[in-house]
Length: 467
Image (cartoon, rainbow, N blue to C red):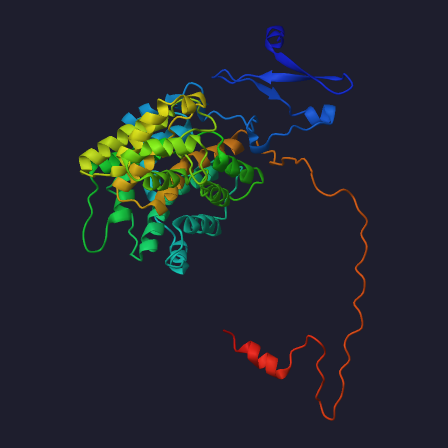
């Protein structure tokens, strides 16, 4: 015990008036960051911390994903994410995140069988798609139908580990099916059910592109690309959407509602919609010969010109997911025989930016969104589905964090404070009573004389005529 006490470190906070407060320093199992434990700060000092965007705040303890931003490292349960993309299947990595270990052959077969058993969609949920308009955004559909699952599966007991496991399996299994249904609905085409003989990635492609007119056989490189996309996007520590799921979960909300909340958070262009923004930027640049001028405009902060797909809140080095995605894009376009001029623009922009001190000094390197949109385009997936693809993949991480939160007892409800900047206390005074109403003047029968500003019969008829 004495040795353990000697290992503890503290920081000292000096308050106005000279009063001091000791703050315990916490160290993670991996990484060089230090965390100041301020859980008792208000109780002992009467002070709060101010940290908009939670840029310096750790909200939980987690054993799922580790990120070292300065070194460009991303680990799932200790495994480099790029190694998992190279050798593992999506459901193996899903098992890794949920359970903590990669499955052996028997565990893998059992897990895959459980997932496939839950891929069918309740007919009442499927019927929801018939009520969306033809121009409804697929993400709008996803937020609605995921939340709708809570009306079907409402018997959950969050304290029961088996109930939580079942909820996790259902969401991992059903999200790709719902994503494909959202796409088919946007096209006005009939939806496809998954097939037992196909892998997780093959099933998604089949449900997306098969029609009653012809059978669809996924290309092997397309299967590999979807598998890699899913793995790369499964988890990424405490981002906006994952934090949303955890905060919703802290209120003990239904897990399907928690995932719907995470999906809504992901929808924003600053989060899950970033790869769509990259495609728009590359299209606006137009061609390789215009890249140099675009870079000049970015550095000059020209109005309306923004560099998308570069930089990250956490990474101050090359995003390891982006390295693998760039490699995957080249392979996909090559094997499918797709000529996309945007790839040439993207490669040239990366080359110029990484050789420019302006961007290097600001640690602006390509992130995973930079090349993923080009790959999805090559697979025939429209930009409106990009964020849906992200949500479908990130669901694995969301449910893992939700389960970890309950399993580890980290259930203190999320309740941040604010720095109030509004009006000071003021006295309430009732509004003055209205003046006397205008009297009606009798003229024989029921006729009346309109007051100033009132409509006459002729004015009313004219107004009703519209334009």
